[in-house]
Image 1 (cartoon, rainbow, N blue to C red):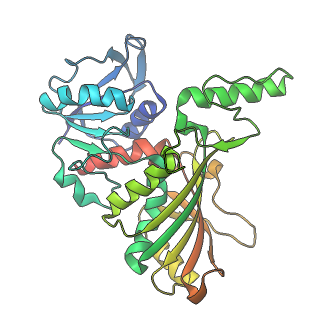
Image 2 (image 1 turned 180 degrees about the vertical axis):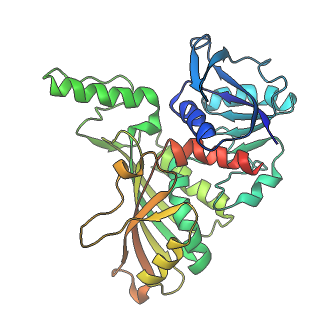
Length: 332
């Protein structure tokens, strides 16, 4: 059945991707309303051969709306969610506002689709790094039981939004022209650099991104027993996150068993050509729905054959954000 849909944060990087995915997947729309701040009101955005106007987001924006795809920042989601729910709309929220709230489902469709049915007006979209890791890790957990995960991320600037992407591009142009490289969006120069993820470091010494990967995975998997530790960094990549994942299983597992499970897993594509030394890369993952998985190998440091290493890449804006939300909306 066609839905009356609104996109909250329509002019941002994820909002633009929402439009692209809704069009590509022929999502059934009775109407589509684009909402953003007053600064963007009056602009138009292309969709299905038309130019749709961008309207200012207010409490009255949700009249007649059945579904809201939200990606305008956590404070905006908290401010306007009550009005959207009061108007009868279900919110699929891409911010951190509701992810760890008890009673609000946190969903990766390839992992816990049944949790969608427990919603009371809001469904949370997980953090991008969590989604990209969970898509290939979940089927391995189901098959073999995971005891511990050690993950190191290589996160593109796309995770910080369209302005961060534009800043990296400008830094590259300035460097090529022999000009000074400046920064204003990211805390450090992104070009030719790697730095700790630009989120607040908590009392436990882990930054917010690292804590999200731990806490969200426990909630999505409904299994707090899995030991997880993460190190999240930014790299000079425009789009698509990569992650090195070390897995300790509860029993011996071979490379071949892992490959068999991943080959049949939804949302996963194996890219693992040892002869050509060709494995998952952000350039290949960008624009793809699937999470690319490679470098599948036994970890010899763990006795008994219980350890496996993987390297994965996934499009942060697409599967790590907009696509995951649209998949949830399709299941609704």
